[in-house]
Length: 262
Image 1: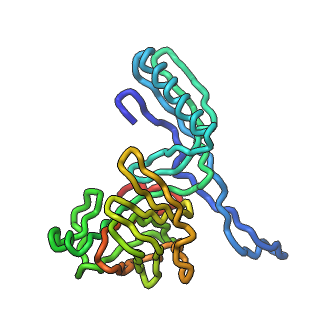
Image 2: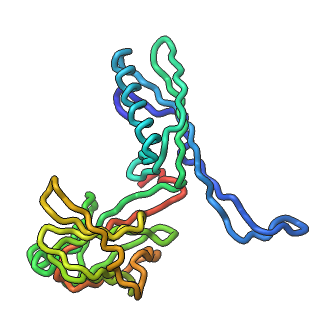
Image 3: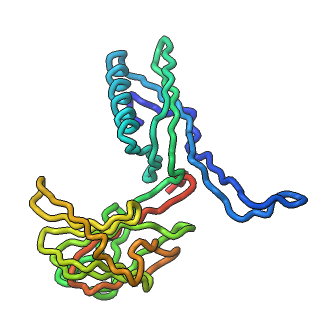
């Protein structure tokens, strides 16, 4: 949305589940529900000059075709939520005063996601700052009781996938969330990072100077005793670690539809 572009007649809040099970005499004995990929319809209204509209349409073409050819989804946003998507078709409808474009937005993973980042400082930083601060502009700061202890809250109705980014120096970093341990047997020096990504199922250490970073696969060095890809449970969870390193947790909070009001 901008001064020269409006989105009209969209159905981004339509959603549904498909029941599966065994047919019985009267109806269905439901065994599970399945959520299919979703295709949303929307109309874009371009209100710039003809030259401005054509420039925007050309850029829109390049972006959506790049995503499709590379099989790398883009994102459609509703406030702070996004759904990964491809723009699979467009149908321009020019009139005398403005350019209208009907589009179809295909979401292979049919959920809306809100990313929330929580920062956990090492002992020295904790003494300096006195709190753990959210990346986003909340009305309060996140504060743990002691160094090496904090909390995160999953306020959705389903377990929440996360990404943990640990900053060196750290040796065999281990983090406990709600009693579940997330640990990798490796050493990080100053400037290195280790990322446990539950969405993509990867464990990557990055090293080297900015602009020339090298990625090292640490997947086989993850702890096998407990899965580091276990999502965070619903509700508030206690976070424990040694307090000797700094890390961030990105929570991927999912909903069938984006919140109308936050």
